[in-house]
Amino acid sequence: MLTYAFRLPPGPKTVDYAVIAEKLGYESVWCPEIPAFGHDIWITLARIAERTSRIGIGAAVLIPSYRHPVAQASAIATIEAIAPGRLKAGFGTGFTGRAGMGKPPLTLADMRRHMEQVRGLLRGDAVDIDGGMAQLLASEGFLPDHPINVPLLFAAQGPKGRQLAHEIADGLITMGGAATGFDTCLVLMNGTVLDDGEDVSTPRVRTAIAPLIALAYHFKYTTDRESVKSLPNGEAWLASVEQIPEDVRHLSVHRGHTLDVSNGHDQLVDVRFAKETTFTGTRDELRTRLDALEEAGATGVIFGTSGVDVEREMHAYAEVAGL
Image (cartoon, rainbow, N blue to C red; front, side, top):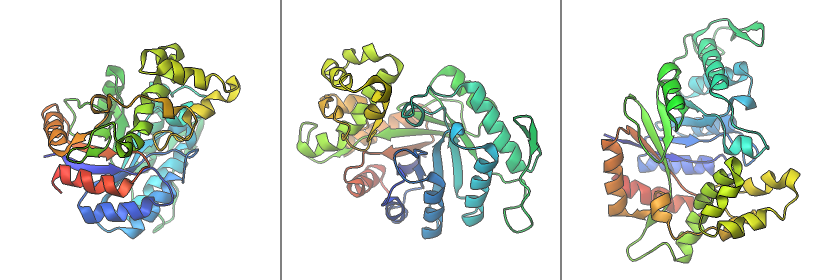
């Protein structure tokens, strides 16, 4: 059976939302590492750990360039000490987090090196990092005893990334579609639940999903900016972006990423295809999609939404999942 989780970007209400998620019966909550967009992930996860008692806690995704492997391993060990057995840590090459700083995603070689270093540190090994040997040297009682067996997952879409996940990770995180061959395959799905008689043209739905649909515009702009023109109203969106000075244009594009349309461009996105491009639909439609994901190899789903009426979406997706 699928497990059901909820994605909560670190911010001022995240801990309160996590408490609600626990009461609603979600298996876990997951926070992305987005320091330019909100609160620090590890401070947030520690606060969640101390305010809850049962719910699983996930970091997804951690971007290696933000933290030295020793700091990363220490943070993982700290949450494991606060909430034993409740943490999973997912790693990724960094789309939003890297593009928002004008940088490309990390390479798969970077990911392999960082994850192997972190895993070695958690085992208690001495690990070569940048030509020097490093180790978690905590005195007795400061961190959990070695080995610290927190599951490490890898987020990947393409075949090379998924092969790397098989080699170095304890499971896969993917967006939109499932993959076979993994004991743990968590699918991240962003959208909104439609009420009876509601469609994507209503003001509530547009407000909720425009920041999520904008993700496609951000991605195409980052990878091949001319390809944005292939999206509905893409030429107008791109023209708006190109009014910004080029050296800071990426900062403008990624402001409010998936949370709102405050960047001055994303109000131009076309939401008519929300059902096809996001996890949006009626309760019955979404249940059918969940069944298809499970048949395709998913072991769990992480529901996500924009920053608009998060509590409403948490209750609505709980109904879809039958929690």
